[in-house]
Length: 254
Ligand SMILES: Nc1ncnc2c1ncn2[C@@H]1O[C@H](COP(=O)(O)OP(=O)(O)OP(=O)(O)O)[C@@H](O)[C@H]1O
Image (cartoon, rainbow, N blue to C red; front, side):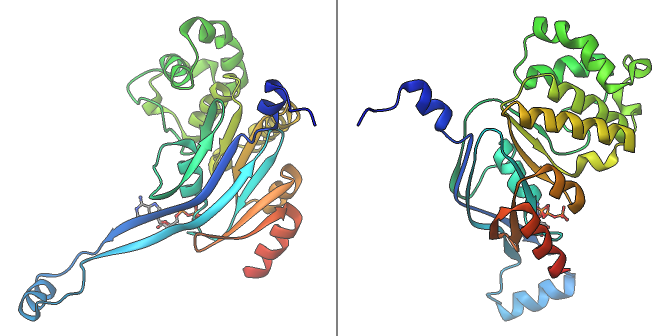
């Protein structure tokens, strides 16, 4: 049997590998003075902090050309999982291996500096996503054209609406040629024509072999855009398979 070449091995590798992932949060509870005094006298062993498990033993892989939806009811752990994949948050257990360049649209306005103009933020964001100044200059007009906010490009972004943030952030992200594209609910703040434009661009990215992970409560959109969905319930993966099946299961949970 012949062993695969280095190139074949590279392309066969998954883009994202998540294994035995766990994330907990410490929830602080505020107590009244009376509660504290009672506790002091009782020498209560009850901790004043509760540890909350947001994700438990989560594992899956994502390959090039796959569009994977993370589905689940409110608080099931979808955004936390996306933040862990993007690297803005660290896991407590398990590991995440990511191969290639990630562009994440996770929180409206994240990665933007309020006192800088749209133009300056394009360069800042592109640099964060790994583009040189020269590369950004070359793509700048295309980015602004995609965003359709040319009239406000020299305005400080603290005066932007959430839809304007989305427009600029999405435009920068898609022009940085990412290998992996992560999108949270953020598209919801865009108006309908811009949402359609974003979805068309997301389809193009998928067709060109990029790996996509999408969090959305728009189940009709998810069914059309994603072939596969991972359904989370209370931080645990309950299914990983065709998106139509996960959407039907989630609609049954409501
Ligand atoms: N920084 C944090 N500190 C404490 N708890 C947190 C933190 N971030 C998330 N959580 C908790 O973890 C759980 C999962 O949150 P997450 O935002 O991942 O859920 P989600 O599935 O994206 O929900 P939604 O559909 O409402 O956006 C929630 O109960 C949330 O309160």
